[in-house]
Amino acid sequence: MERLDKVLANAMVGSRKEVVKLIRAGAVHINGTALTDPSAKINPHEASITVNGVPVFYKEHYHIMLNKPQGYICATEDLREKTVLDLLPEDSVPKHKLFPAGRLDKDTEGFVFLTTDGKLAHRITGPKNHVNKKYYVEVDKPLHAEWAADFRNGITIDDGYQCKSAFFEMLSETACHLTIFEGKFHQVKRMFEALGCTVTFLKRVQIGSVLLDSSLQSGNFRELSEAEIALLEIVPEEYL
Ligand code: URA
Image 1: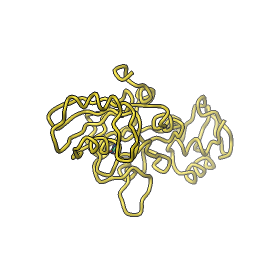
Image 2 (image 1 turned 180 degrees about the vertical axis):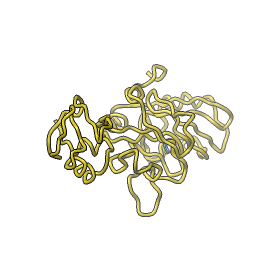
Image 3 (image 1 turned 90 degrees about the horizontal axis):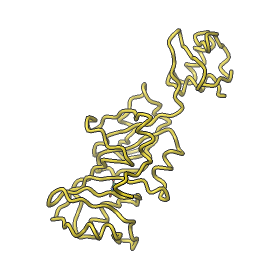
Image 4 (image 1 turned 90 degrees about the vertical axis):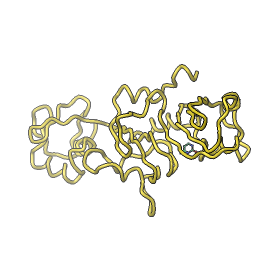
């Protein structure tokens, strides 16, 4: 059971202050009866809720796929830099509760998963959970097909850390896909540095079994479906 004002604020009916006003004014009906006490407890999963006669569909959490452009950092606030939250509008998503699950560098593009659900974020980014993240990578020097074995065996990066097994698929002389299962600072760039080349373009294209929606323009976002939310944690068979 949850407080009525909290449920309505979570459902994006308005700010906590605004929904309290609506409730006190008798605009909110629960199962057909006006409830005027903002602290009244309801079961948001079962109650039929209307505000001024309009049904409200309750959502406990919000989950968003963002196609991040370069120039934005993965943080919720920053004094100098633009953050991924600057790309979201105020009115349709609870911006103040969303945070990026995992980070992309300022100059990396692509799939950022933003959520209000800390537990889910942890399952996707936690180092013990090994959820795959796939990147499209361009480098400044020719790639070599034999590197697939080096990536599989674990590349040792500059600080001596031996990365976990990764999947390398060459797409052209200087472009490839790389799938990793962990998220050390600048990891993909450092893995290629260890092989003597510099990453010139980096874009995350997949998390778990969910591909970045190709119809999402850079800087745009959409909510994930229930099915996609479940698939975020599922490592595709090809990597097992
Ligand atoms: N690896 C990197 O080097 N940078 C990113 O943004 C993501 C993975």
